[in-house]
Image (cartoon, rainbow, N blue to C red; front, side, top):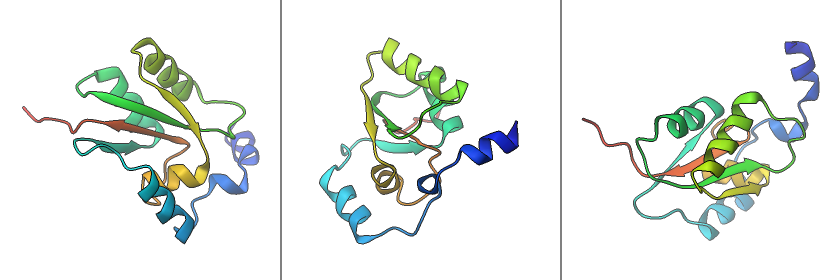
Length: 115
């Protein structure tokens, strides 16, 4: 099963160095002042399931054909909570998470308030 997943990866699934284009995209779509970007399947999924934050938008990579079950569940949860889901390019996701590994998913949310 891991081999099949590896074979399905495309070149644009791998993070490259941030380019000038990514920096420009990040500036053109600034997040709100009181929010942060979560990135990666597990952090986004867990945040949506725990509901300890306010969510602004879920960003999903537009070129993915087949989604992992966790990604599907995160999208369904976002839609059921009326959180906008926006399909975006890999470059846009790279810009949002400043080049870190996002696995095709980013979530704009309020900061987590510690108890």
